[in-house]
Amino acid sequence: MTNTSSERILELHRHQRDYFASGVTLDLSFRKEMLRKLLGAIKKWEKPLYEALLTDLHKSEQEAFLTEVSLVTGEIRNHLRNLSRWARAKCKPTPMQMIPSRSRIVSEPLGCSLIVAPWNYPVQLLLNPLVGAISSGCTAILKPSPYVPNVSRVLGEMISYSFDEHYIALVQGNREVNTQLLDLRWDVIFFTGSPALGRLVMQAASRHLTPVVLELGGKSPCFIAAGADLKLAAKRLAWGKALNAGQTCIAPDYVLIDKKIRDAFVDEYFRQVHALLGEDPQRTEHFVRMVNDKAFERVASYISGPDVSGTVRGGKTDPATRYIEPAVVLDPAPDSPVMTTEVFGPVLPVCSYDTLDDAVAFVNGREKPLALYFFGRLKDGKDVVRRTSSGGACINDTIMHIVNEKVPFGGVGNSGMGSYHGKLSFDAFTHERALIITPRRLDLPFRYMPYKLYRLFRLILG
Image (cartoon, rainbow, N blue to C red; front, side, top):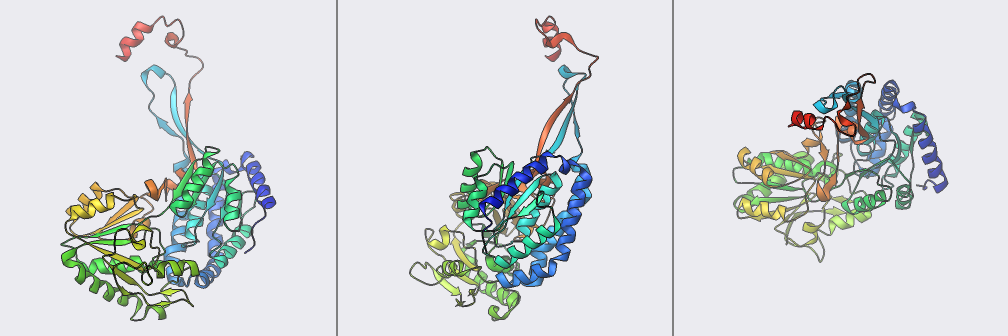
């Protein structure tokens, strides 16, 4: 795919700054019209998007609808229902010393936004932030991933057909284009990707003190404690790891399990994998492939080669189609590659522990993850959540916290900063502005020099 030229990027950036300055995007009726236009565009391009996702990732239409399209259309409808209320000025109490003034909070768009999306959920992770940008009244330049060229091409066609490029535009290219974009001044940057790239984005944004929302990743642990329903845990964990072939930022990255139930769980895990994907997962239409050869080689190295640590079960590979069978690595060394980098594939390290305290200490000794999962008694799960930190968490489930638009989705520490979904998507592109309204006729003298009423004023305030 050809990189968008520097001249074109500068032109779009300049036009969007002028368009935002015109004030067109401030009108709520305009924002709602644009949200409806985006909804209509997704419906119009839905079939080409499914075909492109199948070509680039071997993602089935069913999985594409559930994990990509439906999440975006649901987000749009939520914003259409609630935008008027979210954008309304909020009355706030005014302290006694400010009477007769009135206090308000006014929501205003931050301005020109840059949205950079990854390849693993290329539709959802590009368009969901765009919903927040439109809803808040921002303009947006979108940058999809070059690793899914067919999806990026269809998204480019959809955006250029549906929107004035002075308002919303999409640019294509590799990391050179990212660098050119990050050299420009933005009013807000929304980035989804790896922690390493997130640091580069934050460094670039610091030059202009640009606010950022960073949705990153990390090694999301899954606790399986004594007392867990092993069949349920294995089923939900197998689904969470098989989804997008583990190429999900909130995929369960590794398991910490009571050593007394490890072997029983692993046997049940493979039974559930086969129940989901069949005895030969390579033959099902519902199992995604690695996005490119580099990703295939990296994930395959965790289960074959000189750096493998622990005992491997499963893991048949086919380099020609970038297929990796779901695999388990039993008790790898804590400093092995599979335990020090985000797996981002269908390989699941399973690590035994003696006590739950040991498992909690292991997680707390590493970077804060984007997600944390626990299977076992509710009381124990709540205790583990209380004693750890992560972007989000589920007890007796995986992945599903991303589905509820009424709770925040975002990271903490190394796994990101800022949240979105629902109203938080509106908030991510919005500045809350304090507004004090003071009448002209009544002008109390106590605040003016030489403070003649100071003693009385102090007595009143205590």
